[in-house]
Length: 291
Image 1 (cartoon, rainbow, N blue to C red):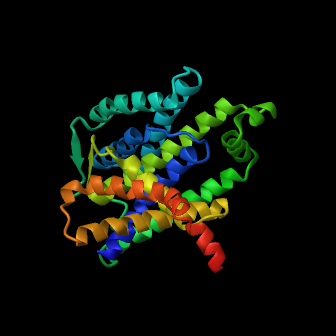
Image 2: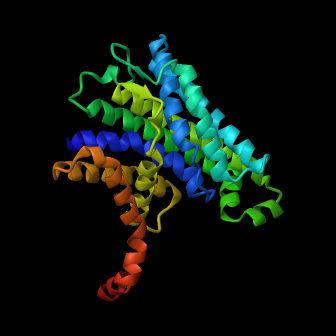
C-alpha cells in the first residue's frame, strides 16, 4: 500500500507542478484545472481506444489542455474577464467537449494498451513509480530550462511585479497567456496519466482535483522553506507523496472512504493554517532560541 501511495504521489505531482506555474508564479488561481484535467484524460483514453499508442495519445492530451488554457488566457487578457470567472466558463464548456470526444460520460481502457504495459515485469505498483519518476523528471527539466531563458525570466518577472515588468517592455498579457497554456498542458498530461493508471476516463473526473494539486504545493512549501526554484519543484513532488501517505493513513485508521474529499480538504486547510498557528504559538521564536 505504501508503494501504491508513492506511485500515486508521483503521478499526481505532475498536477501540482502545473498548478504551481500559475498559482505561485503568476499569483492567480486558475479554475480551468478542473476542466483541463479530465479533458486530458478523455482525449488520451479516446485516442488509445481508437488505436493510437499511449505516448501519442498523451501528446494529444497535452495539446488539448494547452488549447483550454489558451481560451482562458484570451478571455482573461483580451476579453477582460476576471481570471476566476474565465476559468469557470472554460471549465463548464469543457464538460460538453469531453462528452463530444468520448461520446459517453465515461470510457474504459479495459483490454487496451497503457503506458505502463512495457513495465509489466516489475512488481505491483513499481511500473507507476517508474513512469511517474520519468514524467516528473522530464516536466521539471523542461520547466527549469524554460525558466532560465529570457522568455522564462520575463514570465517570472510578470508574476513578481507586473507594473515593473511592463515598464521594461515585457508584454505581460502574453506572459499570462503563455503561463495558462503551459499550466493546463501539464495538468492535462497529469489527467492522461491518472486515467491510464485508473483504467478509465470520466467527465466528472476533475471535481476537486485542484485541492489535490494545492495540497501537494502547500505541503511542500510548509516542509521546505527558502529553497531554489528547482528545489521548490522537487518539494512539490515530495509534498504530493506525503499527501498521498496522509490519505493512506486516514484510510488505515478505518475512516469511510466515501468522505475522502472531506479529509482531503481538511488536510489542505490545516496545511494552509500552519504558518498562522506557528505565529500564534510563537514556535519560530522558540526554535530560534533553542537554536
